[in-house]
Image (cartoon, rainbow, N blue to C red; front, side):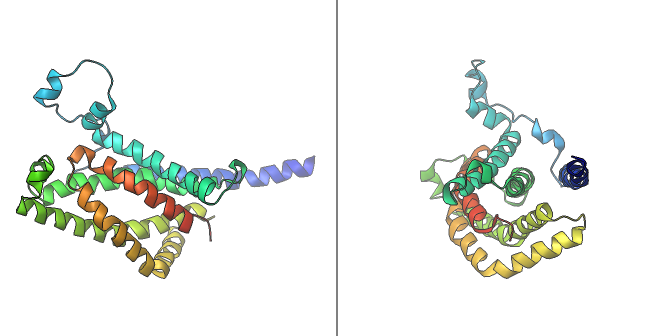
Length: 256
């Protein structure tokens, strides 16, 4: 009995340390968001101004479509977090055929945190806030009917530029960030240099296949995602991202 107590007490600091590390990473990330140009914590609850048609048609009943339009950032953060976690569970339970008892929850935590911090917050910041500043006429182009979009040459050039820039972000920021997140969660140390070293090492080791996969999946997908209205940009992206994340989880999610 005493031996069991001793073992439990020895294991407690390790478990507490892992929880503290996770909490610390989340708090650091939230603090860091406030330094991003054009990003504010108030974005989470910020409402998009309603159009005259929306105001006239407001019946007081809750509608997801209305929520997504009025609170685009909160909507994206919610979808991104739940989607990445769910996609990993699909990969573990359906593709790898694990039972509920065999689920690797630490691996799921990698995707949950990555979904919230990168896909939910950072991706919204640069694909909506920053792209609107870099590329003029985005609102006008995305609000047009498809028949008019196909005839809008300046808008199509902007669409191509956004796609090219996003592919660069995916290959040079998204992939290394994912591998560093994974190294952080699976690591037993607080040494950030070790997380970066292991994460970047995995990124460099797999870059050829990963780049190929990114271009063949996200090249066509971005052309669609950057064509829809801004409030629907990231929710549309998450449809493709669910399948992509399930693949990423199956191929690279487990600790190796």
